[in-house]
Image 1 (cartoon, one colour):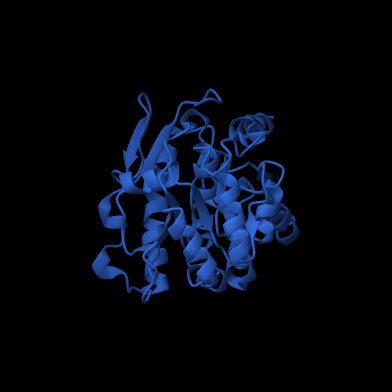
Image 2 (cartoon, one colour):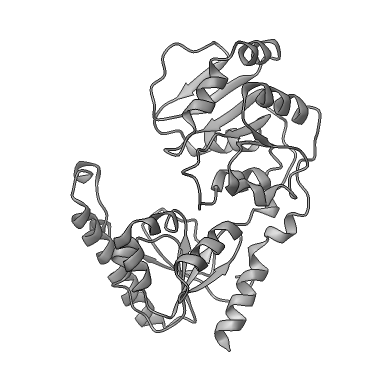
Length: 315
């Protein structure tokens, strides 16, 4: 909207908070997998995805937009999606999947009016090296400047784990006597959101399994002492949404020492990457004494990048 465009949304019911004055088209519910169908084959999953894309295509043909932005995609089904206008596709884990020959082939078969949006510079460089003949642009993931605020901090360190978790690093921290002593003495609770079942853990550690309510999640992201993201090396060509949420709320971040975070070093005012329990303690101790953790965040404002993209496409 800041680029001067009218927005039309196509999504599942209740999935997006649609701004006022924006058109909304609801994808029929029968195009989505239900809990009882989770064990369907990959072919069946692609079939469902193609149905959603064909519905989206019918909307595009109806409203004839200047551009289409696809927020998430699977190259195996998106290859069937053809519209005449410029189509921007957001790459999350997709670039990592180029190591699979069939996904690499499907990506290279996407039409030439497709522009691959890469959310980090590292992703962009890799995309250019793998798909030299495809259009790609760097548009940072961005943050929410209107939500930046100094919250009253909770005595919590929040750790939302993923399938790309560095198990060795996390286990070395939650089982370390010095870490447990430090957390206990400072009345800090390490809250781990995980699908994994843990055994006996110290009383200063809380494990949250399964779904957590949106309000609790927002509290854990906006108000903790810090957010700990122990990603492993498989988190190679991806952008962390939680990391950028932390920027939005001026919440300090602690991460594992992997290359994807290197490009943010000039934006964070402290050494936020850790390799050991002692480094973890040192960072938590440091951020507890500070109130400003980030600088020069304007370079992550995606709006100016989108404006440049639309200008180029209009030429």
